[in-house]
Image 1 (tube, rainbow, N blue to C red):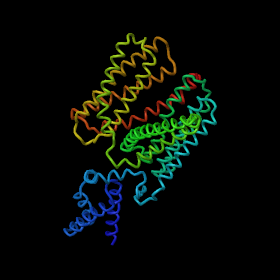
Image 2 (cartoon, rainbow, N blue to C red):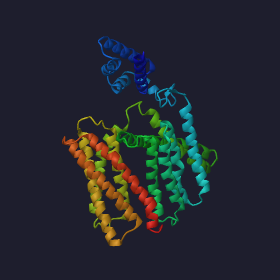
Image 3 (tube, helix red, strand yellow):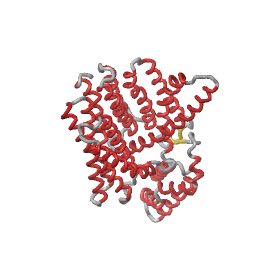
Image 4 (tube, rainbow, N blue to C red):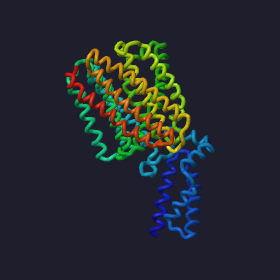
Length: 452
């Protein structure tokens, strides 16, 4: 009897896993389960015990992800119906059915809460610099709360997020920054990096040491950026049309839009975008593979043009500071594309043209970074140090190490001397270094440079 109970428990776990594949309906799972039970019965008749029969039957049934893709091809109409915002039923973290509207209610409440926090911050902080320093602190808790609620994080994870969050909040609000000074601007730029790491802790929950979960967070970040951009574009068009109609009838909508609509819409859309990524990640193939294949060759062309512009600009000391800042932004964009490409790739697939293009992109980015580092060191030797120069130099050194090792591991993989998983693990294990450097810039730089 105990054996039968264990077999039923295994079947229930398998059924819950399959039901998470959005394109497979309950009726389809019932059919698969009947087939599975028939296989188990046949195998038990040959003398296998329950565990052995179940494992062999699962193996014969085939890969569930492959089955999902096959169903998606055969039942595309059903696939598109799954894009409805609130499905007929959802599954909770334990695999049990969850109330239909519960998650939507949580998302709406947190999105409104983020908007209320930002609106209160606008009313509370008279100084624009203080508001800029705190806007991330006002929004990040609501996004982290949604992800933490979704994953039912424990007390240890909450503490791991709360302690550095409080330290960051104290530093940003207690430090006597010189208004619009370099250290204040650097703190405003680097604080979101730290906050995003804390959001990542909520996403991975207790699995923060897992390379796979960290890469999942990279995928989540990329998909979130896409969904948020789409929401922003759609909301912008809708808002523009509404404003146009109101102006034609003699009503000026600008005060309401700037003081109320935008403070609620911008942070609220971030929470909604996170919900969409979580809700729809299994419905269709991620957009990452398409985007990376389009933008990788285009990025190579851009990097070659940038490199030519840097070389043609004359002496490295005379390179415009704004140009160096723009180059840093481009290198960060290249890094994001590299991470997105790696997160979208099947680690077991053999090397392909896309992998060679990715290596060319990394090598081109390395060349640009080396030229930039040379220019920065030359400027420091000529004009001395400053918070901006040291922060930029540190970032470019981090990028140099990241790109060099990525190029080396990519070359090993393409030559058959290494695995793609090694390249993937390098990305996930190096990413926290950027957050550590951001923490140094926010916490250490202001007192080091007298808050100037």
